[in-house]
Image 1 (cartoon, rainbow, N blue to C red):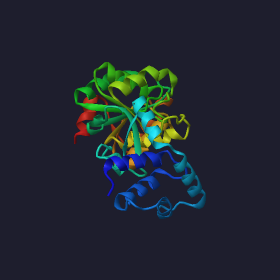
Image 2: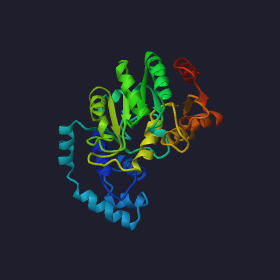
Image 3: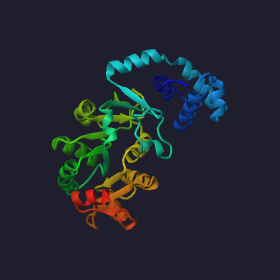
Image 4: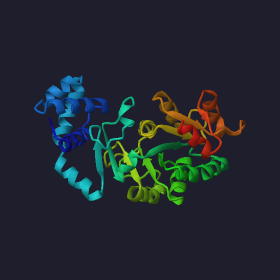
Length: 290
């Protein structure tokens, strides 16, 4: 059986390859841990890769200079943890389609703490800011580490207020750790990477493409036992995150809003559909600990 350091390097190599998805990478890792001498061709066959996939996989695998990439990552402070590592988030390991590997900068031990995801609209009302200003200090006082996606709006406010009140925060982004999106959060991202935790399933150099963000949302929901939705319009990314959390059997908390406000349509509907309505940080903590 491979040593865990070796399997982490193998999983890094796989994460840089084309032609396979996260589930296939994990399946390959399982096979390799049991049969270290299996060939690439046998791996490809056993995880059900089609011929076009195989061609992409073989070509990209051979083209990767893994030692150079590892050296480059060390220089830029990028580390990684694979699905098979003890440091991989426990709850994330059990979601549908977990990532095969996470890249990170900062304190990976934060993933062992009491994590609460906080999401909401990029465009929001003053009400969302007031709610966060009331909730965040109470959550920090109760030792929650707050997780969000470093997007404009509620995400940014969550990270900023957590830092302001001397709490700890985790940011999950939809691009490589050497990229910054949105650009105006560059300084905030650097602070989080240095003093908190910055996470991504995407290798360095990966641009913030639109389809990455729904995938990013499953990690935000997956690393926590609960998700708090502050403000969300119908059909928003925040509702995607909340629905992922519900499907994974996690707690979803929603702050009610003005029924005439478009910013509260999604959160109010979540409450109607069974999400826990919370009116204060104290109420959230009480419900979370039940």
